Amino acid sequence: RLQKWMFAKLREVVESFGYLEYDAPILEPIDIYLAKTGEEIVNEQLYSFTDRGDRKVAIRPEMTPSVSRMVAARRQELAYPLRWYSIPNLWRYERPQRGRLREHWQLNVDIFGVADISADHEIILIADSLMKTFKAPAGSYEIRISSRKLVDYFFREILKLNDQQFHDASKLIDRWHKIEIPDFETQLKEIVDGHGQERLLELISTRNLDDLPSEVKNHGSVTELKKLMGLLKESEVEAASFDFSVIRGMDYYDDIIFEVFDTDPENNRSMFGGGRYDGLVAAFGVEPVPTVGFGMGDVTLQNFLELHKLVPKLEVETDAVVILIGDVYQPAQKVLAELRSKGLNVSVDSTDRKLDVKIKNAAKSSVKYAIFIGEEELKSQKFKLKNLESGDEKVLSLDNLVTQIS
Image 1 (cartoon, rainbow, N blue to C red):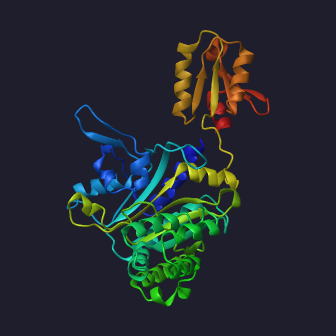
Image 2 (image 1 turned 135 degrees about the vertical axis):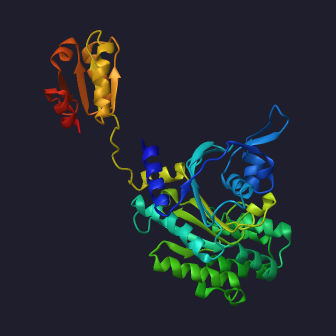
């Protein structure tokens, strides 16, 4: 019930922004992940095998390569901007722990065909709207925003890092919020020289774009970040802030990136994130399509909602259990059909257990009402209705019974 409630909320929000739902195959050619997905997933977490046609395939660990392939296949016929979303189940071979399961479900939201900052703004606005829809209190989460273009410029042009240093520094910075500062500095010394360490630590510690070091504050990526932050402020996205330590593990991100963090000390971690990946559709052999999107997993969302006590009491969707008395299964079908035609969700206990056992079992299922049908009830068309919470009983006609339950 909780998952169904969460998914309904997710759909409600993204569809209010005009997004259409799609789906994709569970199995994909392994090649679409080998070149386009983060190395941790490819090297350690991918479920892959050779099928009967001697093709190397993988069970989808994420949705972005799949949807990019789908858009590439229909590049010329689709109408842009294209707003798509999905809530598929995904698989990764990783150690099950808090926030991570080998199979999980994930909301994916992507907008294709918009190159300017308005698309980045819309995607982050949706992420914030989702958190607010679940009634997340102010300060319970942060949306930390950075730019891969800024990272590339700083590492390549300012620090002059080679490919291996770039790779190692990115992986280390991605762990900035997960390890102690002394440990971070020790590992950083193995990658960057002394002066470079100071400059990098200064940049990581800066939260205001106006306070960035002079060597980067006039870079084009910073100008774009300022535009984005201005739009988010106008949209009252109070949780948004700049954070250079946001790197994102997927290799296809190439511009604005963001992550949504739970600020509670018990679960101080990244919950979900996304960003711009303008080059991924083109990797399938077509003209580029500018794209921004994000993915939100159901496990981390549920952890957040439970930790912050945001899960409401969810009503059982079954309105009543019909308890049959005697051998009346066949003649009771007309009554059952009429109950359902009048909008009630009813289940049937047709077992030969004792009546008191049936009643106890119905109460355990959290259904509020029990309807009793035996030969006498079928003849009189008067049915006993029992409130399983209060114990109250009434004998009613079918129409009055429906009114009482509704």
